[in-house]
Amino acid sequence: MRKLILSIAVVALSMPASAQYILVNDELPIPVSDVDKITYEHDDEFDKQLLPSQLAGDQKISIFTQALQLTGLADTLKTYAYAQIDNPSAPMYYYRSHTHSEVAWPFQRKFKEFTVFAETDEAFAQQGITNLEQLKTYAKQVYDEVFPEDAGVSNPTDRRNSLNRFVAYHIMKHKSTYWYLTAYDGTANGTFFQNTNLADIAAWYGTLLPYASLKCSYPMGSEVGVYLNHRGLKDGPDKYGKQVRGAKVVADGEQGFDHECFNGCYFHIDRILAYDKTTREDVLGSELWRVDFKTLTPEIMSCAKDLRGNYMADDAYSYSLNTENGKNIYFKWDRMENITGDSTRNNLGLVNRRAHYYFWSWQGDEVNAFGDYDMTIKLPSVPAGEWEVRMGICGGIETRGAVKVYLNGEVMVDSINMCNYYYDETMNFGELYIEREILDYMAVHYLTVEQTTDGKFLLTDVKTGEKILMARNPYDWNNSILRNVVIRSFLGQNPTTGETVDWTERVTLYREQAKKDYIATLPKIMRAPRECLCGSGQSFAEIPQVMRYPIGRIKTDGKSDNYLRLECLPIHISNNVEAQFDYFELVPKFVYDNQEIPEE
Image 1 (cartoon, rainbow, N blue to C red):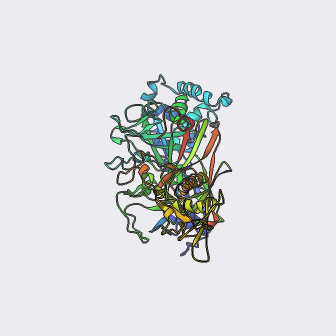
Image 2 (cartoon, rainbow, N blue to C red):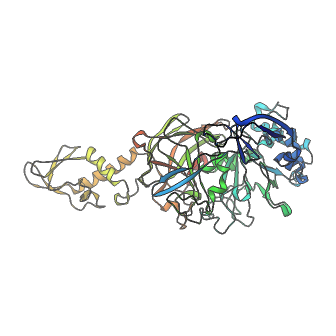
């Protein structure tokens, strides 16, 4: 590793916002214009602080570290510096979400960080692997099956090589210590946001192996702990009868779980971790993924500690700068690896709001976009098959606008109105939060109304052309008899003969049909998951403000990228309008089309 040595010509007393900077010792920002000369010298002491040296010095994982060196991925773990240095004096962002006046801190990129999972030599030995050559043979058996087109690639430094792929699958692109690998924080409140009797706590991450995701979970059985590519529920199988133990993260004597260093963290694991057939089919390929927004990109995950904070503590709002309980952090569009946005629009980027136990958001945190936005998300890589993509949000808030949704460039949903509450056609009219919209629809397609010169109201049956004269407007929102759950009487006069006419049965039928017809024009909505909980312990499925929107379906070969685009609708653009994103679901056909075992 080379140490930076600067010769400073002039040290400026003030730094213009447009200047380029060099960080020295991660602390002192120096404008590039003030640097007269840059030279380097080798710094062995600093090199020892990086992941490759730390891994190489651990005698319990010698076979893995030999593979790391041979594949050249040790050099990848030394590329700790970003090419672009952030402005250290970037301003904070003051915003208002519904009734909350809050502050977000800028995301400051300093160093690339990684997380590495390494089998102990003992774990390899349990599978008959006692040296590097035997590991090469094992890797070839696994990855030549997954990527048969590359079976002849023998150079271990080639990213298509089987050993290279084996090692790459052990590396995540952000640093995570043990209690941030999942949403569980190891405390008595750690299961606050999930009913662990219904589903294990789990998270999905990308790895250095293209198109191969990794699952981290924390089952609450007798053998609690963090597992990689585990499937089941507590100590047994899940409701589909699936159970895969996976590799467990194990403590290293007095060292504990975490092996932290300058640019990351590594862990010991007790079984072999591989993107093999069992992982692809029995773990990743046949269960629902509930992907929290912050796990979509390593930059947001690098801020996981601040974003979790003390989720049991409230904040002093009105733009409080108190960071005692954690930080809200904003991410500009050019700062995220898997998320891009149109920087020409009137929008700063994304604000990730820190976790609160009372938020109606999974894991207590959420991501917001304010004003005009158009962003594209690279979805996590899933195994080959057919998948449904869903979006989970908290709606029912008047400041939340509408979004148009595309999947792989194709419009899937013309408009999702984030002001809506949950609804479905099985609910009776009095339970619906869209009753006004249904009556408006009815007034156009079933029963029109116009006021007469003498102040009465003439109603026309659109289907038959028949008419009825009433003393009051049944569509008047405050006094509408159409809003009754059961329309008890709908009496009027024939406008020609003056006879009393009873349209009660007819109008009741029309209103129910208008409800079905109108709901059919809206995006499909699903109840929020039963296993997700809010601070009171109430299931999300019982809260009408939270819901899931099925976006569309994809068919993938497991070796292709999929993209979700979210665009603010022009009629809703305002700096006071926000969008809220909580999580996405990636659901395999085995789950969403299972005829024997219903999903919910």
